[in-house]
Amino acid sequence: MEALLFRGLVGEIGPMLLGRRLERIYSPHPGWWSFRLQPGDHPRFLLFAHHPADVALTLSPHAPENPPAPTAQVMRLRKHVQGLRILCCKADWTLRRLSLGLGRHDPHTWLVLDAQKGVFMADQPEPRDIDASTTSATDLNDSEAISWPTWEQIRDNDQIWQSHPHVSPLLRRTIQTLPEDQGRSLLQALQSGIAPETYFLYRAPGGGKSSSTIRPWALPWPLPPSLRQGRDEHPCASAFQATNLLAQTIFFPDQASNGTAAPDPREIKRIARLRRNLDADEHRLREYVRLADQAELIRCHLYQLPAKQLAPRSKIDRLTLNDPKGETVELTLNKRLTILENMQRWFQLADKGRRGLAHVQRRRDQIHSNPDTNWVETMGTRTTASSNHRPPVQKARNRPNDKGTLPLHRFLSSDGFVLLRGKNQKANHHLLTKAASPFDYWFHAADGPGAHLILKRDSPGRDVPERTMEEAAGLAGLASHFSGAARATIICAQVKYVRPVKGTPGMAVVDQVLRTLSVPLEPDLETKLRITA
Image 1: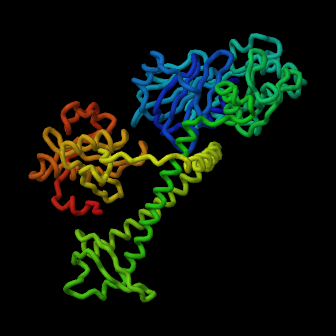
Image 2: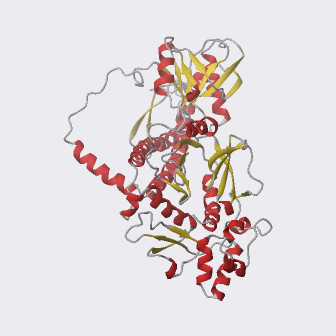
Image 3: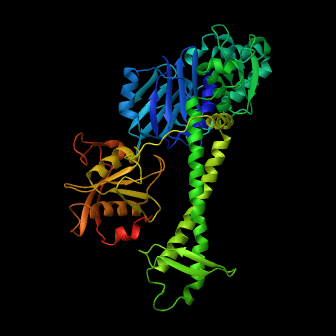
């Protein structure tokens, strides 16, 4: 990869990396690195190759196949930087080096991707590294930090790349081949740092599979025909597009030679799973939106309710009213809430449903823009057609994670988060090991016995409001040795850091505490938040 192409690339992908968690690290091949990032609006895998002949850096929705066992260097990086967020991106494009500042709140360690030295950790970035996440290519080309040779020096010195590594032999040959006026204009345009309108990929005819004789090139300037050495020219609209195509020929040569890259089967399964979950979420949220009609019907009849038996603050399980068309409608109420509280609750759920439907539509648009979506639709059609001939599968009975058999208290926080609390030791154990996801939050009373409480999150990156955290802690405190006290001290941790004790149901060991909360105990909190069937 040319240093001048690297300059344009880091300015484009820097914002795509910020804030994303580094979920997993792989080394599919010596000199190749694959970093799985937190899902987002941009491709999930950061691919980097630092082989001398094939330097590549890009974001891709797919990753090469990994070896059965990671290397010692991979294990070391996983131990120190895996799970941290990318908070800052700095680069020295002349050396093709990208430094990622990692941490939870402030960058305290740096993961360096260097075209010459490979991948390693550092305590701080190099002094020449410039912020690539908020800096344009022109600023990265700061004349005070980057020196450029003259046209005459480039023409006469065939070792100019040793003192000016950003002037590659291919750039020198291009300037030598062009007429003097065109060569000077090209050099001046590259020195300015202004991103070109078009980038160019040069690869072998017929698809681009790299070989020992014809390797792909991606450049921010067009090559004269005499220097292409039989390669086909492919214009690209951005540095990211050019480097992505270059990376395809390096990481996926067999797919690139076919003209179209086949998607990763794991990506197909992930998209299909997301679409199923979105369908279920949409159905649930539409049911929430329909509750607004019931709430509006109650509001229109509040003044007509009898003052004694059906006062707005009375608690009943059924209410019969007439809708605007004159038809009789029977409403099923939560008998633990008053008529007025039921109405307010339905309005809140309807608002939540509308907000959720907008989010579901945004996620559908993102999935639809993924090129693998067509593969998912094709495979889904085949699966549906073949599934009609499969024998029915008998469902397992009394599964421990079945909501119908697992003895749990279920609550819904004021912000719409589901809270699950075990009723006994066995339920606590299955709640932690079966019903909870690794990124859910676990609550338990400090320094004493108590029930396990799980706060469900939709994704690892979802933030939880402080009000919900305090409500979850309060519910955990009410089912603990703090139940008779005015306040409770509750510890909170991610489920992935909580290990059940083998042979002792309900006991757990916490490897890493997220935070400790001191909350007042409200006796009516359970009644207020409880979910009833």
